[in-house]
Amino acid sequence: MSKHTAQVAWTLNNGDFLKGTYSREHLWKFDGGVVVPASPALTSVPLPYSNPANVDPEEAYIAAISSCHLLSFLYVAFQGGFEVLSYNDNAIGDLTANERRVKWVSKVTLHPKIVYGTHAPTPEQEAKLHHEAHETCYIANSVKTEIIIA
Image 1: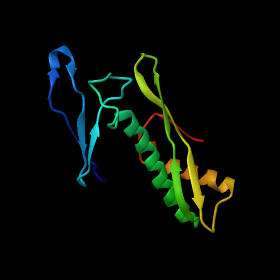
Image 2: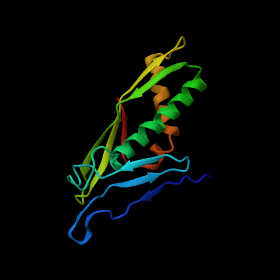
Image 3: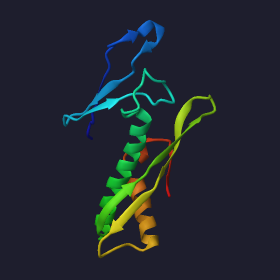
Image 4: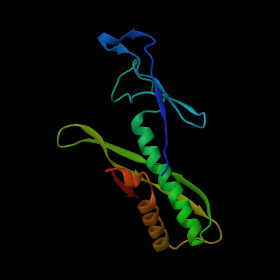
């Protein structure tokens, strides 16, 4: 078993908290020393109380799903003897309302574009690699969001 940590920090720097006129910008701090400026999405909290230049939780969630699939894919491709030269994904998440009208990321569609070296899989083998990657991805196994590989 392993544990993974993240520190999330926010401080009231300006505005009036009790009136709701305060910045929601905050920081994510990770064990390796990386600090990521974070903020809610503009669709959730308008300017000036959010910052579109920062990463929002929905984007981070979608990136985590995509990143986990990438890492799992690279591993299963390596295990299968397929040489991957590059992997790029334009992941898209759909935010919808559930039966209680609570918004959630109901679907994430991955659009991986992979460049192979001298030993490339057939389309059928590539589909199998994506399936295996999905089945072994820690994040995919942890969420109820539908994940589609387009």
